[in-house]
Image (cartoon, rainbow, N blue to C red; front, side, top):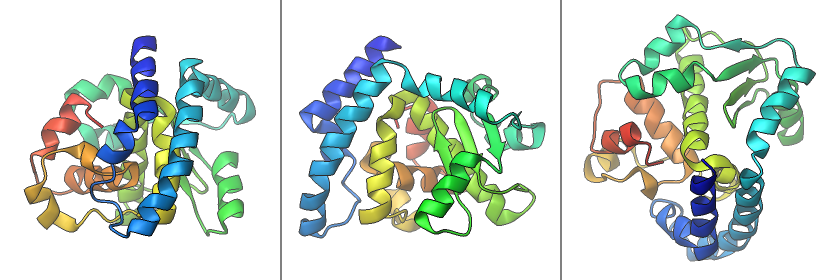
Length: 216
């Protein structure tokens, strides 16, 4: 696990991760130029934090500061039944509804509701009902971030935050997925949207192979 984290740090320092994951980000040159500096600095910081297992420390903090938590229930785990290699991991994920972290983020960003996938915890500013279509997609999207943490550590967090401001969540629709075979061509938010679309519909693409092998 520690070896993997040093590899993540190397990829950030080399700039490889940035150029690899910006294939389908904004094509506006000024945005790509402006993004690279904060992406690089924050990427290095989070990669170093990851070496000291800060993500796992955060889990401990949440257990102390918010008692109301739960694991994924059977209905929620069923959304990922086609990923048997991930089920044991997903059973370790904690779900926090009415999370103080999500509510703080909601206040900070002035949103009416907010969901976050941080390390192997998922946070929502309110209670969710996966029988509701929008809540179900929201839930699966945030679960994708916990899988990004499993395979990439905390590095996905600054990438996702910057992507939200400069390139967004849109991945080009199903037409793009028919043409592209590498999940790593997309930023973390686009990846999470792709994951939700594929898990909740019958659509499949070559990207499924990367999801199954953890190539986030």
